[in-house]
Every structure is written in structure tokens, then in C-alpha cells.
Amino acid sequence: MFSLKTIAFTLMAVVIGAHAESHTVTFDNRCGRGTPMLIQGPNVLSTGQPFTSNGPLISAIAYLQTGPCLFNGEGCTLVETTLVNPTSPGSGSSSDISLIPPHAFNVAAGFTYNNGCSGHTDCTDANCPTAFHKPDDTQVQVACQANNAGLTIIFCG
Image (cartoon, rainbow, N blue to C red; front, side, top):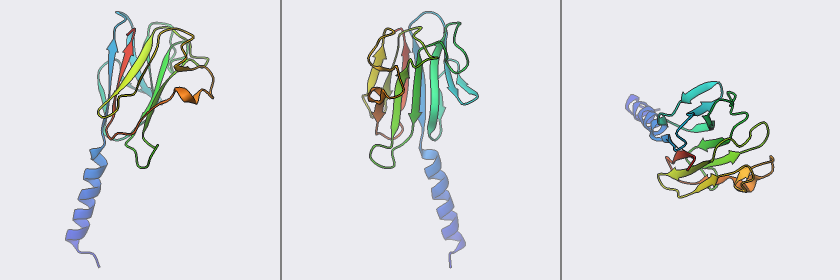
């Protein structure tokens, strides 16, 4: 039989462990125009301010709103990211740039991981080989296997 003290300690450990994971996305807009957008599902997480997720950040997108971009980045250069602490080899964070239609090049974009990973990529024109142009271009994904990885997204870098 479990004692009340054992149950309380176990619950406290679970709560502390659940809050230990944290990921921050920051923007570096060098274009001199536009509004950086960070979107997750139907939610706007940031319009240029640093955003910190206390836990995994799953399936977020970012783009520079220069006027023609629709809510999910259609018509613009898209950065896609999932920031999550790895639970097994290969299960950590992954980020990429997408130009798969209806997304299209509008500004140069890139990103770099921080907090334990040195992975980065840049896309400076519509034909850049570091972006998804079709769904099976999976070699362009940049992984990070560090806990609490953050991402800096750079426009016009």
C-alpha cells in the first residue's frame, strides 16, 4: 500500500518533470519590413516577439507577413518546426523550409538551432536546394537531438 507521502512525492516529481521542457522561438527580421508570424493550428503564438513553449512545440509554422501571405503562410516562404526533447534516438526536434505550393518564395528565410545543436539552413531564392519543393524532399529537414532546443528564425539574412 502506498503512503500519502509517497503519492505526494510522485505527483510532485511528475509535475516538475512536465514543466522542465522548454523551447523558445525568436525572430531576426533583417528585411526592414513585414511582420514575423508564428502559428500553431488556429492560434497566433507570436507576431515577432520571442515565444517560449513550456513543453513540446508541435507543428508550428513561421513566415514573414509582407502582405500577400494567407493565415497558414500560403504564398510565402514557410519555416516549419517541431521542438521536442528526444525520448529515443531520432525523436527530437525537426525544422525545415517549405516552398511546396501553395507556399512560394517571398523573402529569404533561414533558421538556426540554439541550446545544444548547431543545425541551420538558409533559403535565399525560389530554387534553393535547402527547401521542400515537393513532399518527398525529406533530406532538407534539419534535426536536433538536444533537450530544450530553441530556434532563431532569420528573414533576409
